[in-house]
Image (cartoon, rainbow over all chains, first blue to last red; front, side, top):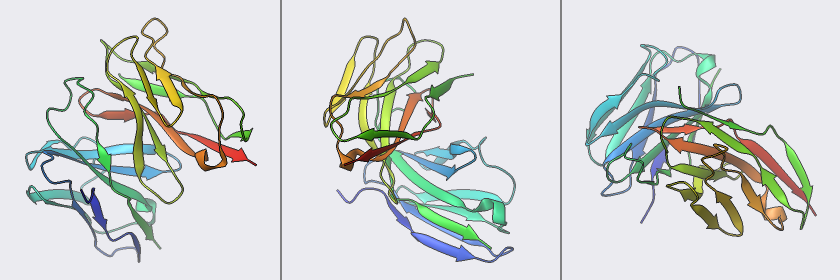
Length: 118
Length: 109
């Protein structure tokens, strides 16, 4: 299996520009997660989807952030307009079966998109 | 709310030393517990997991036992290698995966 695929791996953009991060989950996985990692705040869950439907977006920092999952094999995280404080590593992850049932479902992470906003 | 607390790093050890990274959690009930590892420049990889009390997860020489009495899931390895240098994250499953702050491990030859 190819694993979770994210693009771009690295992006440097100017403040105010729109940033779009992309994710392809593992085939057959029905849960998709977006995490953000920074030195100050560690790993934060931004949003997650089940069967393409957003379930919990309470971690999305503000209206500048939006996420979509138009089909089972693709998701985007968009930041518009971007700000320097958005600089972070953004991880997409996916898993299979019911999440939250304490069944020990493993989630698989992509290699991350390293975003720098200058 | 639910949370995970890990020992602060960085932890620096010599090759073949014994490793312990402490992890305690606060949660209702008995969530599944995980250790993930992040090598430099890479994403997180599952290292091991335990789904119920007294379970022991193990992988690549690492072990952790789910202790409900002490609400702990400490990571151990008997003899570390330079290649084990990474950041280790403890996590619990509660409708979503809740991570500790991570512990950086550096192993010197």
